[in-house]
Every structure is written in C-alpha cells, then in structure tokens.
Image (tube, one colour):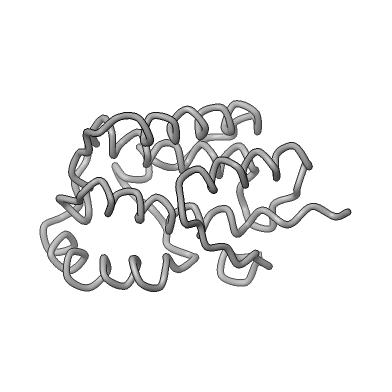
Length: 157
C-alpha cells in the first residue's frame, strides 16, 4: 500500500501539546499503523525535524527549491497541510528518515523534543523554507505531525 492510498485519520493539531497527547494515547492503546512506518519510526521522524529546528541542520536544499518553497510550498503547507507521498532523498533523507526504532524509544524522543520546543526560544533556519519565526516553526511541526500521525489508526475499542 502506498502512502497516498493508505487509510488515514483526519487530524488538526492546534498545539504542540496535542501532538504529544495523541502520541501517548495511540502508543498506550497499541494502535496499528496504516502506512509503511511503525509508530516508533513516525515519532522518531517527527522528533528529528523538531530537533533540527532547535539545533540546526547539516544540510540545505538546492537554491531553486528554497526559492520555490518560500513562495509556493510554504503558503500551501501552512493553509492546507502536507501531502502524503513525498520522498526525502540525499542528505535530507539521511538526516530525517528513521531506521527501525522501538515504539517506546521513538515516543520518548518525540516527547522530549516537544518539551524542548515549548521551553527553548531559539529556532534555526529550515533547510528548505529558510528563516521561520518560532510560531511558523510550531505551525510547520503541527502540519508535519498531522501528516505522519494520520497513518496511525484509531485503536479499536
């Protein structure tokens, strides 16, 4: 099943804390994933982007992509969310794509990263969208989480 055809939840996070609360709830319920990644991989991927926004990234997208992203992709993501099916490659893939990781380890990393975002003021430029304010970064993290967390099914009661 491809990421574009997998059954997904519809989610809208208003805060970073809502991401943490949803992840804990789904993890505790042992909810299945409907895409290609485990819960742990989803949480780890989200945490890696969050950490990069706090600590900086060791890669930058090509100049033409950064310019297109700033004026076309950024407004679309902020208004409509992120589409499924995008494949990270090269240095971005190496930095952000998770290896298999235990669900609890991925959750722990995500919760720690969210706590840091809530408590630390610094933000580094995005390797694709360039300079973002703290509020823009938080919105990007929420949109990113909405995409990936949508692949964790609601637990069956």
